[in-house]
Image 1 (cartoon, one colour):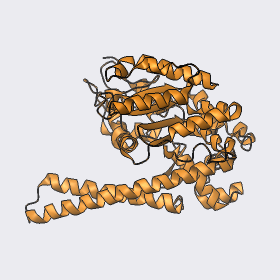
Image 2 (cartoon, rainbow, N blue to C red):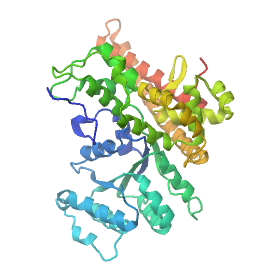
Image 3 (tube, helix red, strand yellow):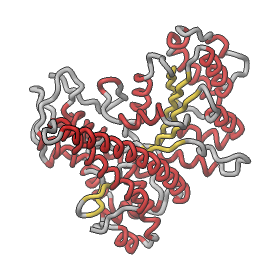
Image 4 (spheres, rainbow, N blue to C red):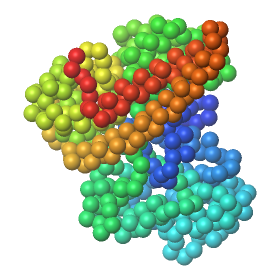
Length: 433
């Protein structure tokens, strides 16, 4: 049997696991501009490609994937945009879009997007613009802010266009570079979502490859061990499962030596650490040193407790730490080992970062408020569902179907999880064990 786990490149369709709530939110929310922040290899490109896959029938949206990687100028971005349109030529011409109209003299990306949006509106369609590697916009902010402002105006214009930007947290520097704009900084108006680890159900499905024609045979205990070791990080899940995979279609028992750090993983963690702000670095290193709650970290680092709570929130959202019964801990075993092996060197670099704390805290505040609204709405929906289920149970009297009882219990568990999440968002990390 072939190894079904993917450790390189993006995935979509049946190879894409989880993210159901986020995908639905992006496609159905009231905000037509969404920014998704996530670490490298957390699945940002796959998220965009899955959105493309889900909307490829063109019933409402016509998706367009626009990769900005390597682009430094508006000319570069315009060329990449036109290449993207040509790559999906049939998608547009099949609904009557005359692509030759996009090739006007001196037409840049903002104008191309305006023309494309207008032509799609004539076909009663909306453009779903999927923008990968948004860090490239930083180059434009420094060298050509006027073009960047024009692009922002198109991306945030009402009607006919829904845009999804993805990038790492370094994208937060866009607001610093554009804070003196007479309107508002670039990212104001974008709904912020963090790309985190998979939920337990999706992680277990990925481990077992339940969407594959031939699923992998894995015991419940193996699933639990793999999830614990990886923190449900989608890339690390696939790396570890790939190491454990046997040609018989099973996973061998997990051993400590299977959690080794190769050069690829070491480079991955090193790159992610580079884009942490000084405060985030101090909090993470304090946790590695054995400080497990906000008060202890505050005393160890000298950071105010409120700032520690902010950085705990951001690191939890970015998949760098998790809350355990014993307090705060690195999010997965691979990260813990890398931090411990490089602790002295990292400690020397704790205050040297290209991403300032104030830019990070701006993003934290925006992300926390966005998540608070989302979780509050999910709670409202689940509580309504529970009331309806309880009414159904009452109608059955003493002979309640087992399926209905299970639905009630699952709904109650989800409400409890959402209530705990809302408490974490609004009150800071409840980590005093």
